Amino acid sequence: MLRPWETQFWLEESDDTLHSRLLNRLLQDIKDGRLPAGSPLPGSRTLAKQLTVNRKTVQGVYNELEAQGWVTSKLRRGTFIADVLPEKNLSKSHQALLNLTDEAPVTSSLFTGLYNDSLPSTNIPHNANDGSPDTRLIPYEVLARAYRRACITLSRNAYLGYGDPKGSYELRKSIHTMLSGDRFMKLNVEDICLVRGSQMGLYLTACVLQPQKGVIIVEELCYQAAITTFEAKGFDIIRCKLDQQGLVIDDLNNILSTTKVAAVYVTPHHQYPTTVCLPMNRRLQILQLSKSHQFAIIEDDYDHEFHYENRPIPPLASLPGAENVIHIGSLSKVFAPGLRVGYMAAQRPFIDKIAQQIMLIDRQGNTVTEYAIADLMESGEVKKHIRKACKLYQQRRDFAVSEFKRVFGNKVTFNVPSGGLALWVNLSPMIKHLDADNLIDWKDSSANFYFCPREHTLHLRFGYGATNNHEITQSIKALQVMLLKIEQE
Image 1: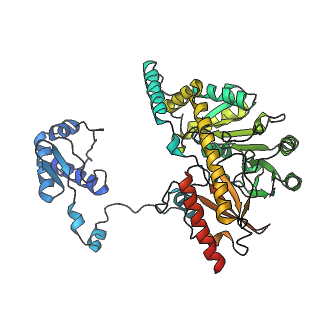
Image 2 (image 1 turned 90 degrees about the horizontal axis):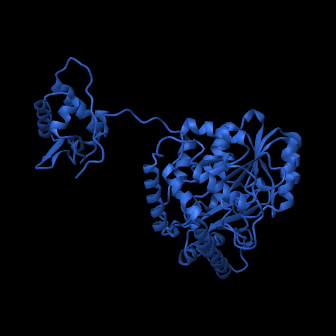
Image 3 (image 1 turned 60 degrees about the horizontal axis):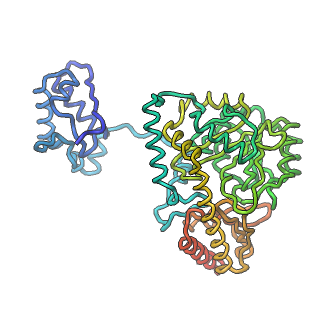
């Protein structure tokens, strides 16, 4: 069997013999975990050639390691690190005395919390979420063929070297066609930059915007990862009120009259987490304020594709006076978050600065994936998949609505969203004296709880996108059991 990689070794300069130096090197690599249990060692001839030493020296070291129990020799197969190392037989107190590796650096509570929140729960019986797509719907055969074509084309044309940090021209051109044709945006291909997802777009935006130019205004209830990103880059955050139509313009005006503002972060298509769509008159007002007060608008258009009734309102970036809009979108929700394909569209000087930031951290994106997705967009497969997914997601939305009404009756209230992948359910009629902290014991991640102190209301963001009908019913019944128990206490 071919080995995927040839393990490399080097010997430290010292006055010890070659035998001792090689023995100590291999022992240290085993103890440090560089050579894990069960992994193969190079053949004695191969290692001797790599280190320019006599083969007998290598054979002598291997024999000594085997005698001590560190390696095992298998006939016609080679030498392998032992499955059970000698130190594993020691007591815990003796193992601690070995002190084989330095202690890991202490991780900050902020990053530990973000990492822990990103881990999937092992207690959830199904793929629950608060608005993610169903990765089971991905057309894997079509995608696999697109990847194959991309690999062949790129290899034959020698296109797998370093390229434009903005991303492959082919995918940017396909996205340009989509944004101009489907979303009425007036822009050029060079006004678009590819990123690994909307979160990376938010981070890069925060890198380019400067905290000394002012605070960032976010919606009263907001995507928490965006706030964390802005704060990590030194921005102060001010929350603007929300109502049944989204961002309250009067409150935004009040903030602007007393505060220096660098940017306003909004999710106008389906406000996160409340799902409401910002009406056209408020969109135009925000754009006018942006021009008069000279602040940027960060438009997070995270699920524009999922709209079920009528035609969606055009994004802010397509409307008159959108010169200060930074439009961030994602194709990850169209297929699967694991594909990591997003994009940014803005004025070219800003996009050029974004490309400079990418050069510092990423150099460029995944060329093969970008070519494959561009292929699918140009062939119409992406649009075909979106139509199919939207039809199913609308059915799941309608089923979730009917199940909430069947299980809870008028004990909870909600408006049926025109799109998106989640419901915004008001639990206040049923649970009047409770905040979100009291619901921490319910581990079903198909829902996030939001407590609004200003209105003293408790809401639930219930994701139906990644769950089939049976799983939706399971989640709603689990919620009913928990809320009834709380109500009785």
